[in-house]
Length: 173
Image 1 (spheres, rainbow, N blue to C red):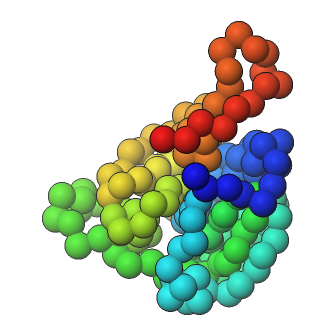
Image 2 (spheres, rainbow, N blue to C red):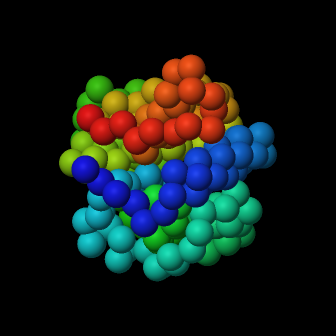
């Protein structure tokens, strides 16, 4: 099992912040690449960027991906409720199955999921479409609810049916 150094409430708050920032950036056609990692990501990926170690906030994510900011080009690494690093370089997928219209950001998002147990969120700066890559596959056209559900599932947070929204239980696969 993977444990984060934070409570379920903090994880839920981080998910809300990530979703809000993704939607805001999508509306403004700001490109983003966010890697959610339950384990430790390979050191060479983490060290290719700038170490941050900051609590996840929508404002911080939006600032990082602002096109005038120096770190906007790479990926942000998130573990639990913390942004570990920004401006990281990811391996590009070599798959020929990937849609030709998808650019470098999408190819990197898919590539990192082929060899690591991570989920990546991509916001296209061309279309504002939010996509999620996992296990080498990409799904597109996410809305707020879909993205929240996907993140909760990935983080192992699932509401217990009939127990009210307050009760959250970690479910591990």
